Image 1: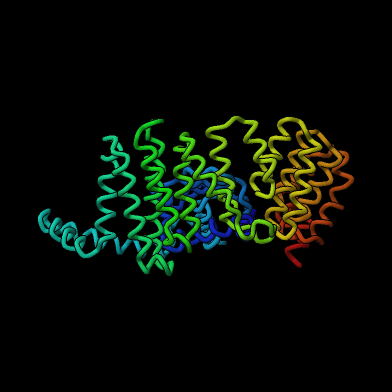
Image 2 (image 1 turned 120 degrees about the vertical axis):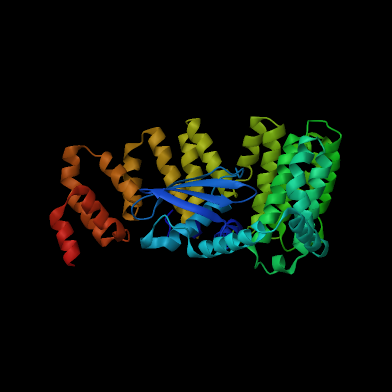
Amino acid sequence: MNLQNFEEYIDGKILSRGENYFKHGYITSLEHDGDDWVAEVEGSEIYTVNVSLSDDGEVLESYCDCPYDFGGCCKHEVAVFFALKEKGDKLSTETKSAKDGKKAEKENLQNILAKLDKPALISLITEYAQTHKPMKNEILFRYAKKENAEAGEYVTAVSSAVALIEEMMKLPEYCDGSDGYIGGAIDEAIEEIRETVFSVPKNHGDGTKIFDMVFNHALDNIFDEWTDLRLDLMSAIVPLCYEIANRERLENYLSVKDKNANDKRSKSYDYRQKQEIQLSIINLFDDETAAKNYIENNLDHFYFRCMAIETATEEKNFAEAEKLCADGEAEHADYGGYVMKFRELRYSVYEAANNMPEKKKLALELMLNGDFTYYIKYKELHSNDEWASVSESVLTKIENGKGRHIYEKVLVHEKHKPRLLNSVDA
């Protein structure tokens, strides 16, 4: 995955939400040490994103400390990818200009408010909140939520978050997607529900009340056009499925088939997110066998297939792992990013199996496709004598292939001055 093509590897809705975070200045800092980047991104709290890049923009590693755990990249990582892509050849540690402008506005407002005494400030906020219900709800939610949760008032904490979401969803700014602030406030409220649910003791009387409140709120028609948020709410109440009745209600909802569920080209984000929620229920309340069976029965989900490949490899069932990779490549043939991921997984299968002929064959294919990492791997698979006899042929294949963009990098790595000079002259 490269900064120039990362969009091909990421689900459409995650991509859209990450781009929204980027455009609305949620990246509060972006610094680097060489090719290792560290960003801070505003969400329900400040999350840290680490990205390691190669010289040609290949994303070698990416990690975010947010709670998202269903594989692939989260919206915070995607926001950082967009920021890095925008910088392009002019990568630096400066925050993007849009954020700088926004920050300056905040600082000016802070200066103005700082000049007001406490009574004037209270009067201003109270007056404004009386005519702006969403602001009033957010103030109550933001500054009372911690006290409510710590005092064991779980229902109060969740109801405050639900009220905020409801008011924010009614605003026209959210409907037309023009205000990233509103989206961030909703994300923060959902995360607060999630954290409160985790803190509710098992079999506590508030558990079912909270489940009913959030479940019924999620079914409200205000989410009909924003079903990803509806499913985010559903996923937040998974820990309350220790009650059999709660689990049955949630699983009955999840079992309703998406209208595009039988069309492999049109599988919706909702359909995949329902699968992920179901797996999280199984992981939390059933055994490993049940989870493995569910994954194996839902290999149409990209990340589930990746999990199955990794499990088969760990169990040394290399033939099954290789078949899962090959079937994945065929099923997702129209999606270059997915195909590349399955090929990389197939290479890891050959590594685990110590299958030298297949490793060489696939490393060559990936290298000629423009992945410098596999040039290094391919070279390491040869003895010094073997490499001396094939190196010129390999360089010619790279020069004339579709992975031509790594050619100069390979020449620099090999300190191949004659070819490098010819390439520069050309």
